[in-house]
Image: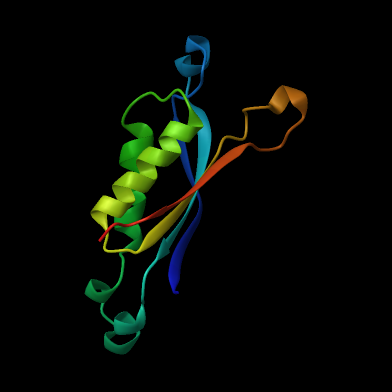
Length: 120
């Protein structure tokens, strides 16, 4: 199956379990893989026959920056659900990185990854 990949889309948002952690914005990185056939687009060479990367990025940005989040898990699920509802794809993989999550423990990055299928 074909896919379009956006790697390490960088956003800043309010996220964290304790209230104190949600007082200032933190860096979040989002990877996304959209699974669908690009066959038609490769024949027509038209943007209307594929997924517009900018539209995907805008959807992610709206979710990440639209409100304060507690868990990375919930944010990841919300991104996946919105992408599945907004674009004609068969499945989506979303990975959300929170680089500062375990900085004090000398862990470079923490991420949550989910794979969801569209029920079309």
